[in-house]
Amino acid sequence: MDLTRLTIREAAKRLKNKEISCLELTSAYLDRIKNLNERLGAYITVCDKKAREQAALAQKRIDSGESISPLAGIPMGIKDNIMTKGILTSCASKILSNFIPPYDATAVKKLYDCGAVMLGKTNLDEFAMGSSTESSWYGVARNPWDESMVPGGSSGGSAVAVAAGLACFSLGTDTGGSIRQPASFCGVVGLKPTYGIVSRYGLAALASSFDQIGPVTRNTEDCALVLNAIAGHDSKDSTFRNIKYPDYTSFLKDDIKELRIGVPKEYISEDLCEDIKHSINEAIEFFEENGANVTEVSLPATEYAVSAYYILSCAEASSNLARFDGIKYGFRASDFDNIFDLYSKTRSEGFGQSVKNRILIGTYALSPEFQDYYKKAQKVRAVVCRDFRKVFNDVDIILGPTEVCSAYRIGEKKDKPLSMSLGDIYTVSVNMAGICALSVPCGKDSRGLPVGMQLIANHFNEGTLLRAAYAYEMGAGGIGLCW
Image: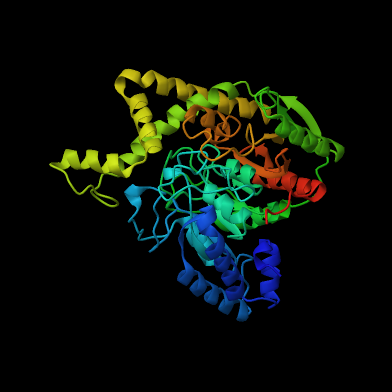
């Protein structure tokens, strides 16, 4: 039996029944990482010793008979822009290649409290700026379905780890689609929660009003289990939403009768690849045949969303990344004449080209002479929010593709940043509005690569997303693992 093929629920059941031990499960994943990680580039740091220690502690909790979380003893990966005490957190950048945080992010601490076992820190685009995980200072990550293809980004390493059996689940971050897009490319489930329900304390900020931590899992049930663990109160995060948090597994029912689903006409456009259009149309048919009420809706601001998103997110990134100056922490240039020369050389040598480009764009947009761009982008953001509010008066869920295309070849779009950015046209609006969205596998393209369906719901309606995705999984079936 290959233990790395088990879902969270399956593994938890076997651990509880003493059919396997936490150390056996963890060792199976560590062995697989040892064999495949050099090829796939899923992890930047592997925590062999810590993982075994945590597995031993989880086993003691299980053996004692105490009431434990379903995540006790379950191996996980953590994206390398989320703080982990005493463990390198590099954001896949040279400028933080020696940074060891003195604290854990709240989301990580909550998972530790559940007894989850951390296998290591997963690869990403540098500072989460990218859509392919090609800009990492530690090297590219590769799609396990076809290693010549990108896994998506920026949470590419997290998606690769789950898809290739190098983690039972992982945490990613989503600023404009960075969980959903790699989940789509790698054939796994990825959730971008409502802004504020998962603490951002301990997340290295890219664009603070967009960033959100979320789970990457093998199926919808696993997604609900992880969300149960990481959602909820944190006094250290001022953007926390003070609401009553449900048990998200209670929404996992295959009954979708009378569910109101809207399909935006802007999402089924001429730019959409035929293979993806075919898979989405089949998914629509499934929901209609199972009692859901599917109607066409309109999100007119979609065509402006990408442009506005990049102005706003780059402006916030320019401000957030100003702290990396070679003084407090991280890389410092060795040869400089004065403090201003130190700043310049540290940032020039420490940041990659993609990060530099976004800092320059953001600084430009925030400069007094050109603030009209920033103001107009904020107005577009308000219109995007208005469009969603209007649509959600009539539907429960919005259904569409996660991406314009499926995975493309490594290097194919590296020198075409505009083409890469336009691929996020269906995802960035969700972050601009702060609502929740989930990508679930819904088929394969003509090359046998996964296709993702995106489900979008209003604030705090993760349960509705999980209900729809679970019903789809139960009725239409998953696409299977890639090994």
